[in-house]
Length: 95
Image (cartoon, rainbow, N blue to C red; front, side, top):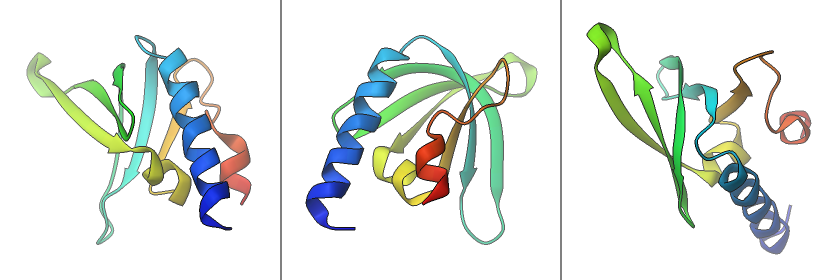
């Protein structure tokens, strides 16, 4: 996949997430060394290079997590709908 094609995909990911701002999503992130986190949160912001989610932790504590769009492109981060568990970007999962 060439660089121009990757940039187009990242732009589409950004546009999709910008539309989902304020929505509740599931996140599955591979942090390396066999550490995978799964959580639910609200997409609060979609910046040009990254997006920010507010995630509820133990005892009602809320943390902010940021991820890059490239993480979705590479499969390090997966986003899913809370209601049905369907992937938000299924076409990227197939590649």
